[in-house]
Structures are given as structure tokens and as C-alpha cells.
Length: 275
Length: 347
Image (cartoon, rainbow over the protein chains, first blue to last red):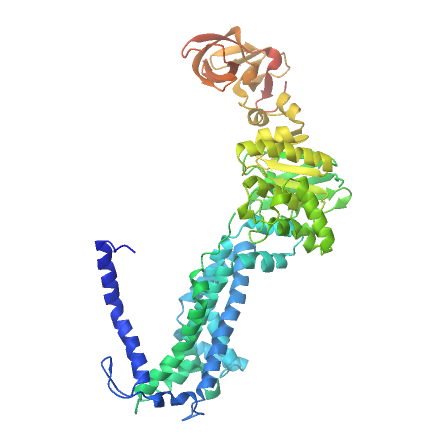
């Protein structure tokens, strides 16, 4: 590979410089999780497997076992992604391809919904879940989180559906498909990159969600990893080695998933329709 | 495959407050090929989509034979359709594309294979069936789209600008092929096009559309020889007919600064005179100044000014037309078309 042109070298150098604090923070997280003591970014003590004791331990101090929190997080994130994909793609298809009264108003309202920060809705959500009997359940939080993901998802998918060939759908209708069949077998396969993008965003957003499970779930058996991690940050005493280990434990599944799915994710926009 | 008669009665389509089509009555005979011709936005494609069942009419009825179909879902109408973009499924091979309508009908595999290869052979694409749409030429894509429309042996074939994405040379070939195929199969066909050469060359009858209405529905020759109004007169024919506004008196037409003899009519007053460039000749009594002469190859298209009017005439390439020279023009009275003030044909 030829050397970079001079003006590019400056750009790359300043890029590295900007990233340095974040990289250092991550390095600190990994080191602190693995070693007994760390001075700056230099390990100063022996390896500390006791930081990872939480993985195998049964519930301690009101916490559920780590595995339960992990499973809850997985369930929560995948459920949010799945429901968001199904609902957003159907809503977006209707908005993009079907004519019904109030269509543009609906689209505008969806966008306004996105403007509300989740925190400002918490009290209302709390009452609604209480009435529905979904307070303190994973299902309740899944529904709320999905609802918050939908505006962005609908707009994203609408963009993909807008680019669909209208004639191709019409051809399928004339060839003998039902309207429903056209959606499933012609439209959806052609927006697969969009579905993958939406699913990824929703999954990651749910995986990192803290406020909703923290406020809407009380029982420890329904905790997710975010609330599990928070429980280690007490006012009295904080074991940073353990917090770092839990943090790493929390981040690991996402990293594994990204490693496995990298090829598809980077191809997100590579699978368009060719004439 | 036997075609069926298609009848449109009082058909109209409104999109909100926009009237795309107003009260259309039209009949396509069994096995006939009819072209809907017109500029974009004239209602021709709307009509085609109404026949296909993709749009629902605002008013009116559509009959296939004795069966009323305007309330039916597209798949229950037994029509085949070719779209301008061909609308082939990009992720399927040509074979699967053509087989698609049969698979939806859950026909047995042996029948699917037999019919697809038979139709593909008919259209000369038997050797590329294992390729995808993106891997074959435009002409082959077009044939695959046609094969997909024909494979289910429809009673009515609808073609929406099927040739407009093809190269000029391939287009001429495809034009003749589609026509021959349509005759052999005897399938009732409606062709939508904005290309008059295509419409005149392929169709038994042509419906000329403008602003949501049919201006004239006749054979290509009749459209050319007896246009019913100034729109058809100016739209059909290439180069287009000269249409001049003026006054009709007893046996003469008077325009801005010149006059000529025309057949005697009872009509008097404002009106239009139409004369085709190929009917204008040199050697008469109307004085004209040559503006420009364009070479077309076999002929030349000469623009002349008569009074305040510009006229175009087709002349043999050998005739000399120097710019700014004055020529005497002959406007043969038996070749002119006369229209009243509203643009309707009167003689």
C-alpha cells in the first residue's frame, strides 16, 4: 500500500488523537477487570479471578444470579428487535405503499412521538402498566421500549419501501398474488437490508437500555444486565475490579454478536435491487 | 388461447380532486390489438390499470365478454401484463420469473416446466432461462416479461410501454415480433404507448387520449386521413400536420396575411385549417419565404413563412430550397382538413 498523502496523514493523526481517551478507558476497563490493582494503565498486582466470582455465584445481596440477568437482557433485546421489525415494517409499508385517509398526518405524529424523551413519559407509562397489570414484568418493559423504537424504525423502513419498484408489486398482483402475499414475498425480501439495520439498531438500543428496566422492574428475577450492573455501584463501597468485570461481561455478548455478524452488517447497503 | 371482447362503459377515475379519466366508453373486439396513444398524463395508463384491476374505477363498468370484472381482484381477471420496467423479480432466474404465475396457481411441476420452456422457446429466450434478469440484455428481459405475461394463457394481454426501454434497433424488431405473436395467439391486447409510430404500426385500432378523454378511436389509416379534431390532427403523423387558425368563408380560408382555396362548406367563421407537410407542394399561388431546410435523408423538411404563419413541408431532397428565397406554394383543396372554432372536424 502506498504511503498516505501528507494532508491525509494529519487527518489520520488527529483522528487517533481524538480516539485515544476512549481507547484508554476501554483498556482500563479490561485491565481493571483482570488484575488486582492497576496504576494508570499498568497492572500492579496479580491476576484477580475473584473479580469474576459473580458469574457463578447464586443470588447475593438481593441480586439474581448473573446468568438470569444475562438471559433477561438477551430476551429483552431480541424481543424488542423482533417486535420492532414486525410492527415498523408493516406500518411503514402501509404508509409508503397504500393510500388511506390521514396518511401524512399519521406520519407527522409518528415523528412528534420521537421527540419525547423517554424519561418525560415515565410517570404516565408507570400508571398505564399498573392498570394493564404489566408493571414489574419483562413483557411490559419490552412493549414500552419497542414503542419508543418504533418512530425511528417506521421512518427508516418507509425510506426503504419508498424505493421499491411499484410495478414489481403490481406485476405480482396481476400474476395472482394477494395483497398480503405481495407484502411478504415480494416487498419484504427486497428490503432485507433495512430490516437488518432496524433489527441491529433496536437490539443494541435495548441492550444498553437502563432507565426503563430500572424504573419499571422491581423484582430482581426480571432484572436485566443494566440494572444488575447498577446494583454494584453502591454509595458505601464500590469494588471497581468487580464493576469492571461485570461491565465487561455486559459488553461481551454484543462484541461476539458483532464479530459474527460483521460481514452482514457491513453489507447493509450492498444488496439493492438491480434492474 | 382465445381472446375475449373487452368493454368499458362510462368508466371514470378520480384521484382526490384530480380527474384522471372522465366517462370512457370503448370496446375492444375479441383477438383485436388496440393501442392507447397519448402524451403523458392523458389517462391512458390509468385506463390500463383499471382494466388490470390495480385501480378501482370511480364510476362505470368493465366487461370481459359477458363477465363484469371491475369488482374483481387482479388475479381473478385472467389478464397478463407487461410493465415498462418489466418488473422482473431480480432474485429469481428467468425460468422462475416466467414460472411465477403458474407456481401461484399451484400447477404440477411437470406442467410448469413444459409451459415455461414452450413459452420461452416461442420468444427465443430458451437458452438463458437459468440466468437472472440482471445478467441478460434489455431485449431478453423484455421477452421474459412478455413470457411471464403469456405463460398463464390470459384472455387479455396488457402492455404498458413495453418497448420504451429498448434500443431503437431492438425496438423495431420487438414491435414486429409482438404483433406476429399476438396475431398467432389471438389474444385480445391493449398496448399503451406515447410513441405514435409504435401505435400505428402495431395496432388494429388506436384510441388517442388527451386530458382524460378519448379524442378519437379508429384504425391507424383513418386517424391519419380523417382526424376528428385538431388535437388528433397535430398528434398523429410525423412530422406533425400544420394546423393554422383563421377564418373560413365561402370556399376560402383566410389567415393572417394570406388566403387559400378550400372546399365549400356551410360553416362560416373562425376555424382551423390543417394540411400535412407531405401534401404541400411547390407551384401554386400562395407566396412563401423559405426559412430553413432540414435534411431528413430521403426527403427534406422545409420551414416556410406565409404571411405571419410558419408552415412545414416535405420535399424531395433534390429540390433546392435556398434560405430567404421566395417560393409559390400549392395547398391542394382536396388534401386539407377543416375544423370549426372548437377544433372539431367539419371537412
